[in-house]
Image (cartoon, rainbow, N blue to C red; front, side, top):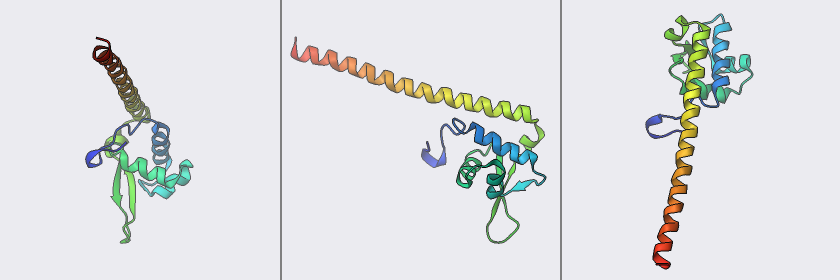
Length: 132
């Protein structure tokens, strides 16, 4: 879900396994930068899914201009992610996915409670208007 200025909610919710697969592709590759098509081939994910994950998670991946003048963009892991071990990065991604999941269900719970309260209030209003 995107909102103002490109800020998106729930970036890790339901994308946790895709993010981990892309991270593993970077870890297993001998090259520092990879093109989304290369990542898609290694992870068996669709290229558009790979591009969406790479562009919406700037905490992990950074866009690097390509070597050619054709405007080809490559992606790399951030230096802060490279320094950490794979267990720490996996725990970080899982923690963010859990946070997004909790926020998602909390939002839906609040919406349901709002409609229940509004329904109860409207029943009380109808009773006072017509049966008073």
